[in-house]
Image (tube, rainbow, N blue to C red; front, side):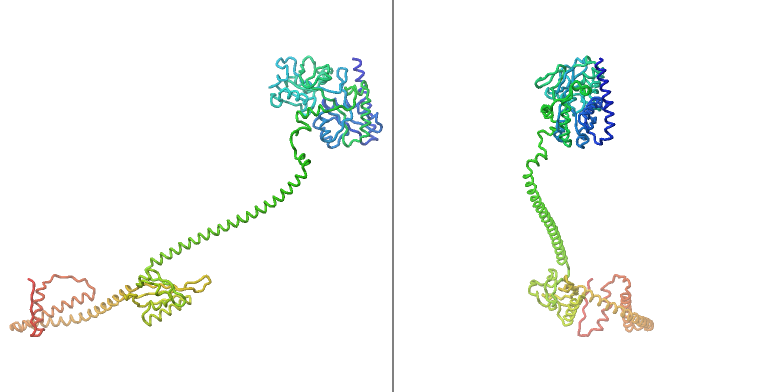
Length: 607
C-alpha cells in the first residue's frame, strides 16, 4: 500500500515537472514533437499514463520538447494523414494499416505490465457475469446481446471476432444485437455487462484486472471463456480468450526525421522497467520492434483494415499491372468508338433518307391514287355526260371525243376523224363554219367561245348543237389545248318551233276573235232582218222557206262565231250533246244548192 502511494506521488511530481517543462520550453521551442496516443480509457487516463513518457523523452533528447496528443479511434487516421503528429502509439492493427497507407515505421514495442510481470504481447477476453449459467462457451452467445469497444479495435473487438468466426459464429448475423461504445473506452464495455445492458462483452486482457485493482469492479462477478485457436505459445498465467498479438508499437511517421526516430527508439529501449515513467504508463518499458505478422494474419482472415479488399481485383491493381494493354485497348476502343459513331451517323442519315424517301413514296402513292380517283371520277363524269365532249389541239384538230359524244354523233369508228379539223364534223353551212372558227379563236385567247349550229349526224339524222369552247391551261399558264362541249338541242329547237307556232296560232286566234266579234255584229243584223222578213212574207210559203234557210244559216254562223270568240278569249267551252243526223239534215239543202247539178248528192245516215 505504501509502495503504491510512493508511486502515485512520483507520478504527480513528474506531471508537475513536465508541466513546468512544457511551459518553459514553449518560450524557446515553437514546434514540439507530438506523440499521438490512442486514448482507449479516455483522455484524462491517457495523459496520466503517458505524459511522464513525454517528459522523459524531452529530458533524454536535448533541444526537443515532446507532448502527448490523446486520440480516439476516429481521430487517428485523419491526424496521421494531415501530419498533425510525429509519432503514433496505438494498438497493433492501427499500426499495420498506417504502415500500409502512410508508410509508418515501428521503432519499438511496448512491454505491458500485468501481475508484476512484463509481456510484449497482449490478449483479449470474452466475458459475462458469473451468475449467467446459460453461457459457457462461444456458441452459447448466439442470440445474445454483445458489446465491444470499437469496430476497429484489435484487443477490444477484432481478436474476439476472429475466435468467433473460427468457431462458426457470425456476430453480425447470429447475435441478437452487436453494439459498440460511443466513447471508445473499454471500461464502458465492462460497466455495460455489469449493469445488464449487454449479455457479454470483450476487452483487453488487462482491462478487467486494472479495473479490479482500481476498485471499480470485482473479478469474482465475471466469468471469462478460455476457448481460442492457434498455438498456446507464451501462454500467460491469467484468463484470456484469444491468441496473443504483439503489443502496441511506437511508430514514426513518414515526415519524421530518421535521426530523431533513432534517438527516441534508444531512449525508449533504455527506459528502466521499474522507473516511475514505466510505472505511470503501466508498462515494463520498451523492447525492440516485434514481428507483427500475426496481426496481418488476423486482419487478412477477417478481411478488414488494409485487407478489406482481399481477393478483389481493384481498378488500381489492373491499371498498375496491365496499363500498356489498357492503353492499347483504350486506343482501339476510341478507334472503334469513332468508327461506330461514324457508322451510327451514316446509318442514321441512311435511315433518315429512307424515311424521307418512304414519305415521298407514300406521298407519291397518295398523289397517284388521288390522281387515279380524279381520273376515274372525271372519266365517269365524261362517260355519264349527256353532252359531246371533245379535246382539240390549238389548230382545231380533233384529239378526243367522249363515248357519249360518239353515240350522239352516231360515229362508229372515231379514229377516222382524229387529227382532222373538228369544224368539218360539227358544221354544214358557211355561217356555222365561220361561227365555229370564231369560237376556237376566242378560246385560244383564253376566252370562252360559243356558237349554235345545225348539223346532221354521220348517219344523217338532223340535229342542232349548242357548243361552248374553253381553253385548257398548262403549268406555265399558257393554253395547251381546247375543251369543246356540244349539247344536242334538237329537242329544244323543236319545242322552240312549236312555241313559235303556238305564238302564231295565238296571234291568229286574237285576230280571229276580233273578226268574229265584227262578224257577229253583222250576223246579228242578218238574223234580225231575216226574222223581220219572215214576219212580212208569212203568206208566201216558197219565199218563206228560203228566208228560213237564211235565218238558220245566220244562226249557225252566229254559233260558230261564238265558239270562235270563246276559243280566242280562252274561255271554258261547254260541250253539248248534238244529233248529228239532224245537223246534217239542216245543212243538206244548203249543200244541194251549192253543188253543181251534175253531182249527185247522196245522204246515208245511221238510224
